[in-house]
Image (cartoon, rainbow, N blue to C red; front, side, top):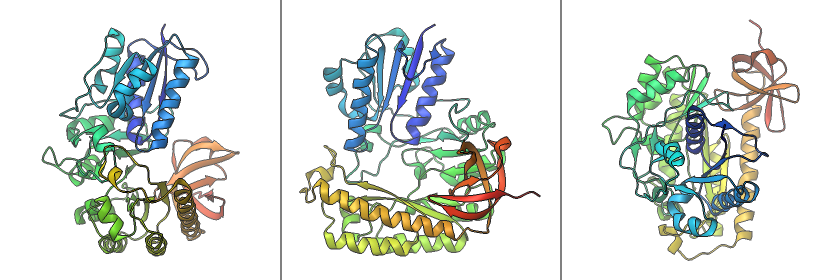
Length: 422
């Protein structure tokens, strides 16, 4: 029996797609191998959102060629779409698949014919799965592509235009994952789901709530301009919708936001945050932040830290600006070296750590619903509906279940809690 390994880099969408490849290979009679063993097929699902992501993708490819020299090597995903000619010449890869034909990967692999179609898909490629093997929670990819073209971002060039999954198929997909206690709706631009097929994300959420029994539903990431009044009302009134939103701000300077081609000003972002919090008491909001953008002056960065602290976010994912060839920002004069970017990341991350600690301390003595996922140092680890990491003192017999827990303290980056026995 032929064996395979899959290495996944990057985002939740890649994680979903890799799960599809895994199940397709199993259905075709392959057997999943072990990481340190030689296998017949190696698949590297790549990322290119930053230079570091591209570098790690190349590392994985080189490692696969070195440790599995006789394997059939498949490289798929965003880095392939933007750099397929380079990858073919540099690594002599057996099969390259970019943004298109991911739904046919196993078919093309088994035929062992060369794949040379690097056009963008015109419609959503459906990749149905039955379970997430390695996770208690499941992702559901509902959307692909992006039309926004932020000046720093390569992803529209790697994924193509926006495409949405048929709503009936999403409902069927979620029903197939009913052994999971939580799903996350994910995509490249999730908040714009449905606009290409005459629908929207709120309509989808309403159908999921009516037609499925999944206890907890999350939205992976959404722009501030896409959190509509209708969505706010739905989250406020539906306890199955997680009380957490991840809303990328990317910069806290109007000049930088404009240069990034972001669709809001800092005051507009702040105003909408206030509306969300007023309408949904207790909701937590986290964000993404890029520092070291070419037009981000020292003064603008320092002012942005003040503005961000005032937002009282639950945490920030902080990234140094990464120049991506072909984007509009790649033509801006590079003002900041890696040392400056690293220092700004350190300062912003320190702020994020303080905000996260402050947020967690407000939950001491409160009762939270926690989905228990795994054992860590004899404690049960899981996330609350507010996306707070919690270590529970007992509950080893309740993995993959939602339990009520009373928070008794904060330790390092986690809440410490005890089960509430009703």
